[in-house]
Image 1: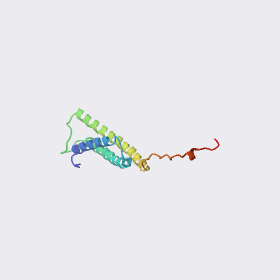
Image 2: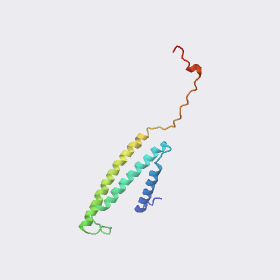
Image 3: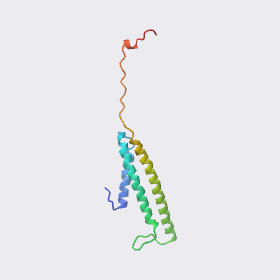
Image 4: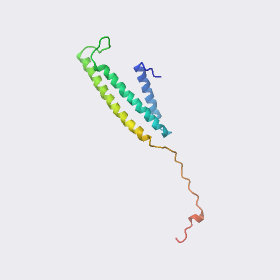
Length: 134
């Protein structure tokens, strides 16, 4: 259950949920669920992009009084910059992935699924097979 206050616990839950989804989508018994799954993934990816940008933002600013800061050294500043850069970059990439998933979600809305039943062959009668004049 999401805490909305503990990022580490919520991230663990997301990982478990995505692992379960990966398992569940190995075989899709009812393709009518795809639309709903894509809609949920679109929202989830948007939230992931936002989270990555927010985590990166922690590393963007300089130290503020009373806040947590990395140790003061050139190596730590360099690492903090790298974390910020990589997470903002990943957040943008994930946002673009979300756009592509949203496009697939929109296209999926145009599909209607039905079960195909095997065609029953009509029984043939001798009169129906008899061709005159051949």
